[in-house]
Amino acid sequence: MTELLATFNGLIIHLSNTPLLPVALTLACYQLGIWIYNKLNHPSWLPPIVSGGLSLAAIITLLPIDYQQYYQGAKWISFLLGPATVALAIPLFLQFHHIRQLFLPIALTLCLGAPLAAGLAVSIAWLMGAEVPVLLSLAPKSVTAPIAVSLEELLGGMTGLVVGIVSIAGVIGSVFTPIFCRWINYKDQRVLGFIMGMNGHGIATARAFEISPKAGAFSSLAMGLTGVFTAVLLPLSVSLLG
Image (tube, rainbow, N blue to C red; front, side, top):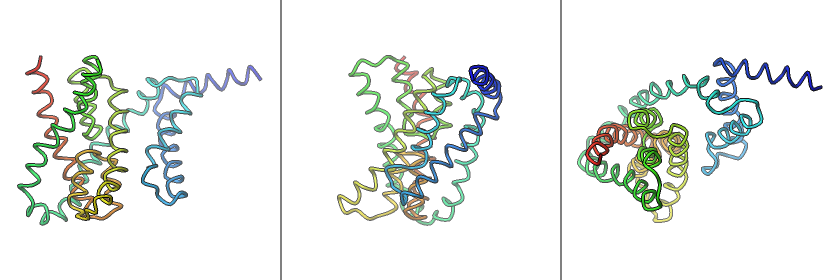
């Protein structure tokens, strides 16, 4: 039994040094998350990325590999997030006539909301005594993962923390924004989608498309604009603040 276990561990370690095992685990856990999501009748509080991510974390903990080995093997999946984000231009184009009518409100909301989303998180962490790498990791919390990771590499944050914070922000944005809008009896799906995309990036955008194509289009617009705005503003702000 001991020899069999040692052979199994050796095989796992060998496979973890290639993309095969990390990619297979990622896809399998995400499919498990989708299955759970469908079985529970699409609960907004448990999107597939949450249940799948928790399952993947548990498996990695049990296997004789660490996070860095997994991340190096599955890193190319993160690369696919970029093309997936660009593909959101299709529903955005289909709803462009609505967007053109609201250009000024969209621009004003972006200029106020994007700095506020980053500034509040960084300010609270700073008041609680967080160190500079933690502050830099929190700043891009509301932008899509490819942009957040690129900013982290540029500014010197911590990759694991950035990915975790971005995921948590996305889940919170996808869950609580529709709840809040229902609570105040606000039904404009354009505003709902824009708020979801600005605060919850890709995760909230996926949820917005489940609500309606219009909400999804405005969410993808907000996600793209917030990402570009943050990618320009954040390095400039860090440079000015030293």
